[in-house]
Amino acid sequence: MDNLLRLAERVEIAIEIGESYYREFKSAFEGPPSKKAPRDLSEIKYDIAKTLVAFANADGGELFVGIEDNHSVSGLPHNQDKITGLLNSPKDCILQDTPVSIKQSSIVEFKGQKVLYFSVNKGSDYVHLTSKGECFQRKDKESVPTASEKIIFEREEKASREYDRAFVDIAKITDLDHDLIDQIAHQISKLISPEKLLQYLDLAEFDGTSLKLRRAALLLFAQRSSKWHPRLQVRILKVDGTEEKTGENFNVTEVGEANGNIFQLIESSWDLLRPHLTDTRFSQDALFKNQIMYPELACREALVNAITHRDYSNEGRGIEVKIFDDRLVIKNPGELLSSVTIEDLKSLTGVHQSRNTYIARVLREAGHIRELGEGIRRIHDLLRSNDMVAPVIGSENKTYSITLFYKYVYSPEEKLWLEEFDNIDLSREQKTVVRLGVNGRLISAKEIFENVGIVDEKVYRELIESLRQMGILTATMSSNEATKFKRKYGGSRKAVPRYQIVKPNTEDVEQVQEEDRSDYARIYVGNIPYDVKEE
Image (cartoon, rainbow, N blue to C red; front, side, top):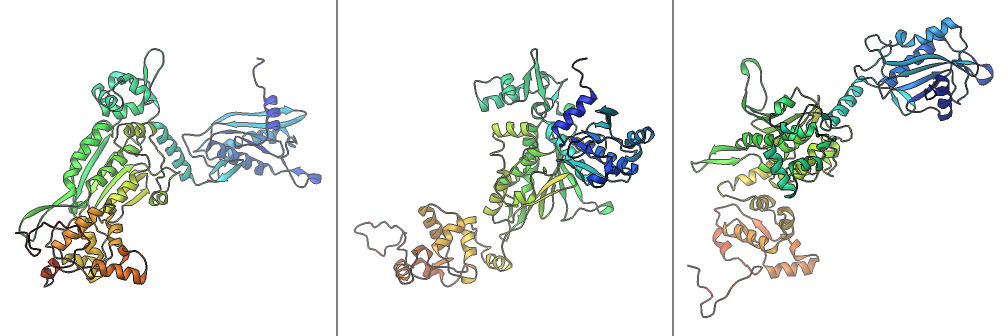
């Protein structure tokens, strides 16, 4: 009994420590120090209820009524019936449908004064409200009005963060795919055994008799994934058109459904999705050709990102990929974590927070994802390098989505200009140069280097030469003239606008073959006339 903390001692310790996130003092008096008067009983009761609701909506706490903010004990200036009424505050002033879990409520005798003591547990079954329907939550040392939806989100987010790290008592190592574990073990280190790999990756702990498995181990390596999670799946859906319809106009068909542990899911879902990233179309030369609609690497990155960061605590939903005529939407359960915003992702600074810490680490070690936080930036870079518009990110209604559009970043003027070159099979680099020269605009070498992303002078020369041979690039001044221009006006010769794009099949094609090429290396063979042609 000597080790039992008595209520009077609890009051004494509270006075010494003071108010905190877990502790609140309330006075039973009001008015200036020299004219203190008892507070209205109903006001005190509601104050008690509000504070207890705030504690229950946070992490629990304790309330002392009869102690001032300066830690002095002023007690309760009420008779026993009224004090009993104060003890009933949780029942009378908290909404009956959202009761708080009271650990203790007592009258404490302390140094000749009566103090009310309440202790409340952290709530988990309800968002607690006062009898007036108001919601409060503990923030620092205050009971702050809070939207109930925010509390629900915080609780769900915490549950989702803890989901993959929890230990599953009934799980055994025989529930895992040993061949898969062995494969991953050899990728990481040829010297490590499957059992040691699980411990090295913090997926298991030895309790003295056997390995205890985290849920992440089951999500990643389970032989029968459906035994441990009902929605380890990715559904691929095809929408006929640009909008989903219902009823007799329903236009959604299922391409397929991938199931299995996370490693299996990555590969099987990609196999289902990949054939739908191209479109077979009838070309102008009367042939059927495959046209790439979306860059494969960007789509795979988005898919793996969804599998890595989805909210696995939501066991009622899987990942959905919808293929529209003009876009690809990947939607997974779980909104962005509260510590990351859409604006953070748009900034492309690599900001990240892992919901599934253990899953993300294993996929990183196995090479399925690169540095954490790089995924979105990599998707942006891949789309930009293919002249496509940036993806759109959404986070609402307990889901996160990324949308890739089958749409190029060309302006209407550029599109009309590029259509003039449809009969020529241009590479992305060649198309970029043609685009720079829209409607005859003069282009500098510096622009070509920067826009194409060239670092090697040889690559630049080969690109220019390929466009010359196609008959669609001319030089408006020679290399010597460009040098004189640079001397006259200052700056770098590379910055001098001297190239012009011309439409194909024009009268200038023959001219192009004889234009000055003094920028490029040439081989001269002795005893052969200079004007001899290659043939």
